[in-house]
Every structure is written in structure tokens, then in C-alpha cells.
Image (spheres, rainbow, N blue to C red):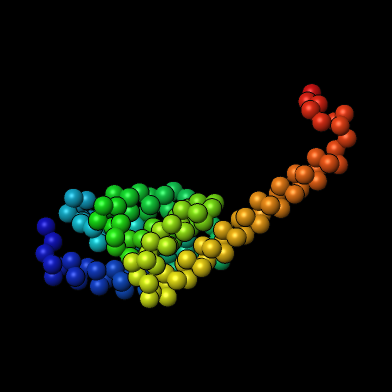
Length: 170
């Protein structure tokens, strides 16, 4: 069982590794601790390490390819879900949930809910303000794309002669 001093030391070490993009090291260190002894904060830090690994990779190896590892990001979300009761009113938990959902899903809608919750809990946090704005922009773009798609469908329908409609090609 870890005492408070040991946990504080580990948390400090995790921050250093996180700054150096050494997410796998963070994961190994936290997962070396039995799950039932990890507690809330280490569980959230483990989730952060998984989502950073999924999006950025160790030492920024995904830096430019915009590839996200879907399995890792889903694992990060499951970890956050496992401490939801403690996290719901914690700005940090909501921030991690917001970022992870933004990366995990094709729509920003779920992330937006967490971002708004984070901002409500920490109204002066510029990072919370930015995530809310980003989500709003993404949602506007999504809406624009949907409208664009509907317009295109309409156009295709109008341009298609009636005798071709409803004809199933064999």
C-alpha cells in the first residue's frame, strides 16, 4: 500500500514524464500499482496517459499524422467512467472526459457537454473556455456539413429522371 508521501512523489514523477511525452512510462508506473489501491487521482492520470498515447504517441510520434488509436482512447474513457461518481463535480475529470470524447467520437456533441460542465465548475479557466469554443465551432461545422449533404441529396434527387428513381440495379 502506498503512503501519501510515496503517492506525492509518484504524481510528481508522472508530471515530469508527461511533459517529456513519455506516456508509456506513466502507464507502466501506474499499472504496477494494484487497481484497488490506485484511487481516484491515479486513475484519472492513467486515463490521461492513455489518451495522450492514443493521440500524440510517445515523444510525439503521432504528432503530425492526426491518427488516433481508437482502442486506447476508448480505454481512457472507460477508466474515467470507472470513477465517474467522484469525478462528476471535479473540473479536472470533466476536462479529461471532454478532451477524450472529442478525440474518440466523430461528433463533438458529447465532448461539448463535458466542456460546458468543466467551464461551469471552473469559469475562469482559459483552457475550459477554449474547449467550449472549439466544441461550438466543430458543432457549427458539423451542422454545415449536414446541410451541405442534404442540399447535395436534394440536387441529386432533382437531377435524377423519374424513371431512374426506385429502380434497383441488378
